[in-house]
Image (tube, rainbow over all chains, first blue to last red; front, side, top):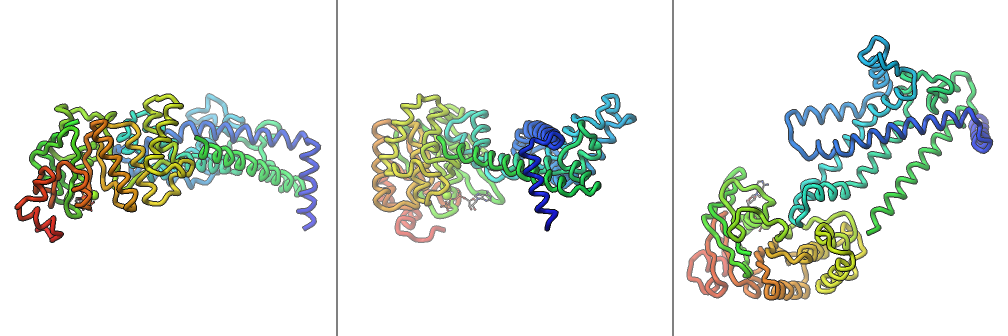
Length: 233
Length: 232
Ligand SMILES: Nc1ncnc2c1ncn2[C@@H]1O[C@H](COP(=O)(O)OP(=O)(O)OP(=O)(O)O)[C@@H](O)[C@H]1O
Ligand SMILES: [Mg+2]
């Protein structure tokens, strides 16, 4: 119990004293996960809707693969990316392993299938109705697509929130490709795991609390944004 | 807008629609009647181009091009967008780039006509079945289509509002020369507003006649239908 209380006290101390080591880690975490989230959103939102709407050969296989990748363990994703980018690997010439960039790539690969899968499910629920309604009201292709985007906006937001939560909280992928190098690739989750190894539980808990606080704030922000959008005309 | 169909065919596991030639005259109100499953919605949705046909042609004022901008259908199960009632009704005007002020006036007017002013700020997904039916009707009427297809528009409405809606349909039919094809289960409604009546049974046309000719018909099947007997 003492350890937890100490951790909470320590957390607030670290937050209010703007502890530079912790802040560096927090900033890098946010930078990596938000960039991954952004790239994944740009890919997953249109792709999810396109996959849901169109029939093409092996569609069922593609869907099953996406659903499988939705549950992929982060460490496996990290391993896969690591092998692709290790010196002898196909992309080794880029020498990206143990950099911020490779962590972004790994997290993007991790969360894109999750977001695609969620968006496919949302879109399938109402796409036929939306498209036939749009058509009967005289909308063109682009207007119909926009109407569908609007109709599934809550689902898209859920996908974004889920993608972000998954990215910011995973440790396996960033550990394998980034290596938790201080000042370079150390993020909140790998830092926590390192602190635990060193027996520095106060700092570990403190960092954990900051992680949760950030997740809470980001989610609240997105939900707030969502509420405004759905009621405004 | 005149609608003419030729050799329309729709097959699911069996043939559900097979009609040789039909003409829905411009500027008239035609009621489609018939037992459940007789192919009424199938026919209407093929005319609306929301359902693929397995054969045949539909001519709109003599042309095979579907004039999507000038016609619309109100489905048997209304589908409303997850937004305010106002936004739902305004949508057809918005995509036609009508100025905001004019949209506001027109939405408010149609809402008054249909007695749904109080609903304008509600989310459309929170409405009752009858309210949804009225909103989807308002959304169809607002852009003044030349061809209006209605699949049981009054099925879930109370008698007072049915009278109101019938008045509105008669009014736009008279003033805007809107061609209306509507499905109804209520023969007295057909009698009140339709110029012509089409009776379908098992995917086939039994009769397409002027209202009075229909009700005075001595065709055996028509008589049975009017008397509420089972059709064979
Ligand atoms: N998607 C479908 N798959 C298989 N059969 C269908 C499908 N849609 C309609 N049918 C069949 O086609 C026939 C005609 O259906 P339709 O909806 O046109 O009837 P309806 O005259 O509108 O009936 P109701 O008065 O009950 O609305 C019915 O037998 C129905 O079961
Ligand atoms: Mg029907």
